[in-house]
Every structure is written in structure tokens, then in C-alpha cells.
Image (tube, rainbow over all chains, first blue to last red; front, side, top):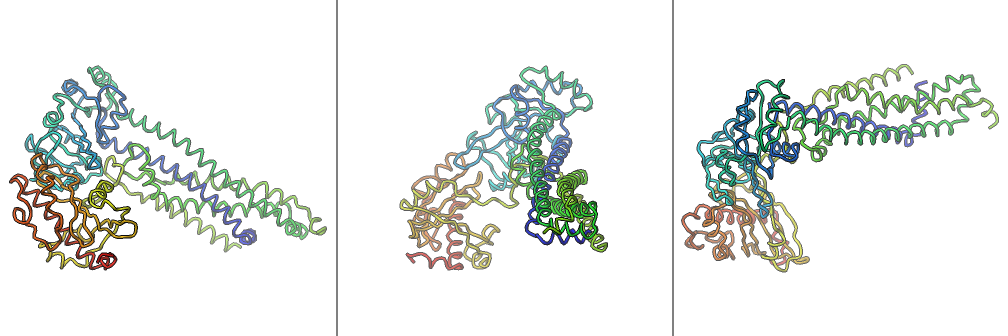
Length: 385
Length: 216
């Protein structure tokens, strides 16, 4: 029966090929959506964990926007009083409180902006991935600057070179160039915190304070205490991640419905293909019945055709998704906020198995009516024709 | 039929196995937070930042330009001899912008990033069809005010006009003197401009593009 079903399908290669292609497209959409959703969640969680931060103190305003901008190496319009840092460091639950002052000087003629970051030595505790590609990874004097690797390449600087900030009128000495980290650090100019405060006319002001707790389990109580610091508000990284995931989740729901529409359309394609085949082959099926084939055998024949279409379409879809998913990942990373560096496309068994099941079951279901109709063909039809 | 069933089933299982294996090969990374654009591994090419303004300045009659890349990797020996140093990796190729008035070639524009004393300096050179400088501009630098003033001085920049790869380029002799504090960066600018002319001369000859010019 399998051979007969296969031969029946091969008789109409274009029509059946299109049905298989449509089903494959629907499966690709579903696999990509589930795989990207899982990869994004896992990547974001891993990277936030690796940073070892639990909290950020940011200026009053939208806390999530502020925290996201700081993490992505962008500047804030508001600033914190340095007293917030001192109070945070006095909190018994705080292990590390690392201040930073970020400032941006747009250079429209150059088509870019200089991004300066002032840090103190506590920053090294939160940046374990920092390694010097050349020179030192930390400042040797108040007039020293450490450059991210891309910034150093764009400015053609290496350790020992002079570096000038035209806007601040300050001459600095490059003491180190960082190894590529794949983070926004690669494009930044790092200077000591005090130097940054002088350069940007922000004495005793900060952009944010990154905080690691001694015991992450005390997050809530520490957050409540730190929230009392005047002029500052607390953002937990967990809350921020939750916000990102909610945003992504809303988009994901929309995309999931689109993927289901794609699957539905492809299943209708399978249904249409099989029904057309049954109508077209009414005489043949009648002859089969006249020769002694039972209703169940004819039903089974068409169902087997549906099975073959389902298996080939779903398998093709899974293969295409795995083959082209990494390529789509580049596009996705352009569009989503705070894209983790790790692979977003994670087509694990937990993702592929449901897609396989949905593809097979829905396609088989699409074959039920055509198969039932085929089984109802009367032997007399062949004799009459 | 049973053979077909076994073959089909085997192929399906193989496909699923391949998928599972592929999914287990997902690359891991230790880099937290990736910036939006994947950074290049080498120093980025110097872009031409203000084409419209530069075309008006260097070629007022220009109506369009075309981008070309000349491959110079086959001429590294000659380049080393003419430049007086080993060509850098970036100098294996030369990007230039041929400028036209409708179909007539007017010249070309080239850009170069050089190492100034306090940061990178980006040059824009306009060349006529005889590969002589017809205009020069510094499109980006971060030099202190006195140095920037000396380098952007119209008399100093104007003194490059008419120079070609064979010209003499000594500051204070063939080009106007600059203040002492601007000397390092001025040398870098001169060296960058001359290098571009040498690269163009070698590249144009290698590719035979020079013969396309109606003025040649």
C-alpha cells in the first residue's frame, strides 16, 4: 500500500511538491519562532548571571530605560549624586558598588560620537572579561586612558600614544588597549572616574552604580533599603530581564499566531491536494473497490498518501529550519533589544519534537476527509463510466 | 513494499538524527552583551563622510561618481620600493571614487586615515585625471587647537594642489613650514597623501584603468 501511495503521489509531482513545500514553510516558521524564543531567554539569563550584578542604582526616570542604556554603553541625561554611591557602599548587604559616569560627545562631521566612561577600581570586580591586548588594563595616572579595541583601531592608538579630547581640551596618555570582548566596551574610551567628572563638568555626579550583593537571596530587603537613597532608584536585573522578556513575549505571541496561520494554510494545501487527487481518481478508486478492495483499504491508501506528504513536508521543514536558522539569527539580532552574544537559535529536541508532532498530526488530520470520501466511492461508478 | 518502508523509515530517522546532532553543536560564547553591529577584525576602512560637499569643492561640474577597488597585492614589491616601507595589510587594496560629469571622467577622490599625534586624522584627496592633487581636506581629527589650526590652514592645504606621486614633499622646502607642535601630525598627513598617490599610480597601471580616461 505504501508503494501504491508513493506512486500516486509521484504522478502529480508539481502539485504534491507544492503541498510539501507549503507544509515545510509552515514548519520552518514554527521551529524558528520556538527556537529563537528559547535561545533569547536562555542567552539573556546566562549573560546577566555572568555579570554578577543584582542591582543598579540609576537616576530618577524610567528605570528600565536607564539600566538598559547603561548596560549598552549609552549615556543618560540625568545623573546621580555621588552620595548615593557612598550610601550604597555603607549598606551591609552590598559586596561591590561600582560607580560609572558616562558621557557622549557627538561628532557629526565624523559620523560618530565619542563615548567616554569614568570608572573607579571597583569596576574590575564586575568586568572579569577585561584583559589588556596591549599595555595595562587599568589607569596608571589621572591623565591615562584605556581604549576599547575598536576605539583604538579607529583612532590608531596604542599604549604610549597621546590622545586628545578636543571638547574637554584634555590631553591623555593611552596606557592600554583592551582585548575584544564583543561588548559595547570595545568602542569606549575609559578614564578614571575623577578625570571623567572633571572633563564633563560633573563634579561628584554619577551616571549609575552597579551593585553586587554579598547574598543574592537578600535582594528584596537590600533593594528596599537602597530605594530610600535620595535622587536614586533601584532596578534589579531580574526585573529588567522580566521587562525585556515581557516585551519579547508580546512579539512572540504575535509571531506564534502568524506561524500557526502559516501551518494552517499549509495543512489546507495538503487537504486540497488530497481531495483533488481523490476526485481526479474516482474511477480508479471505483475499480479498486470493484476488484475487491474494502472501504477501509481505500481509506488507508489515501491516509498513507497523507502520511507521506506529512513526513516529507515536516522533515524538509525541520532540515531547512536548522540549515537557515543561524542565518536568520543575524537578522533577528538587528531587531531585538539587548541581543545576547550567545546563539539565539537553539533548535533542541524540546523545540523540534513539538514541531514534528504538530506537522505530522495536522497533516494527517487534513487527510481524513479525503480518505473518508475515497472510501465511500461506489464500485458501480466504474461500471457506469 | 517492505523494502521501501524500511528505506523511508531509515531516511526519516537519519534526518531526525542529523537534526538532533546539529542542534547539539550550537556554538557557545563567553561574551556578554553583543553590540548591534558585529565589529570588524581589522581597522575599519576610512569612509568618505561628506561626498556631496567634497565633490562641489573639488569638482564643481561633477554629476556623479562610481566606487572602484583596485587590488594591489600583486605589486607589493614595487609599492615597498616606492613608499620606502613595507605596505600595510590595508594597502593591498585601494578604494577610490571616480568622478564624472555625465560620461566624462573628471578625476577621482580617495580617503586615507593616518596616525596623527593625538588621534587619527582622515584625509580626503581630490585628484584630476593626470593624478595630480586638485583639492584636499581633513575630514576628521582630534588634534589640539593650535595643531588643528595649522593643519587646516588653507595655505598649507592649498600647497598640496598640483602635487603628484613623483613630486617632492619635504615640509619647509616643498610645502610650507608648520609650527613645531604640529610637525608630527603634518608629517603623517603628508605621508598619507603621498602614499595614496603612489598606490593609485601603481593600481591604475596594474588594472589598466588609466586608459579609460578620455584625458589620457
